[in-house]
Length: 116
Image 1: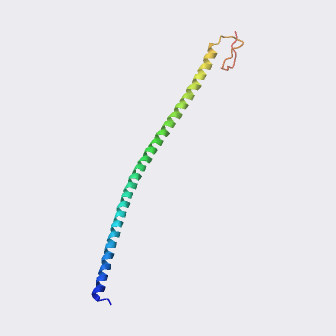
Image 2: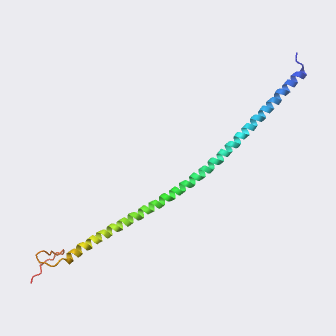
Image 3: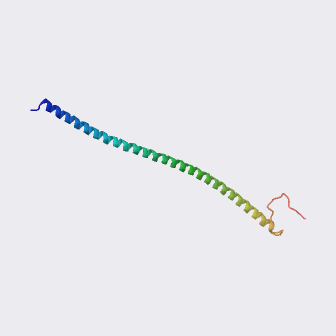
């Protein structure tokens, strides 16, 4: 038979074992918590870098949009200049030809023809 003293001693040992195991679990949970906090910090840093990357990409896209717009304006200006150069070349070719009454046709239409 167990004596009350012996039962009390066993209960104390069980409680001490429970305290020790709980402290060990507590330590493990603290280590896990610390690791998770480090993970959160690392992820927050990564998130900040990604947000900065997004800003850089957005700025680059805006600059590219401006560059495309400027190139289109330049292309329009060059097309206009090409039309003007072609028009001037046509006029110079017409002016540079010797006057021959049978071949010369005025680009202007008058109501009456010149008579000698």
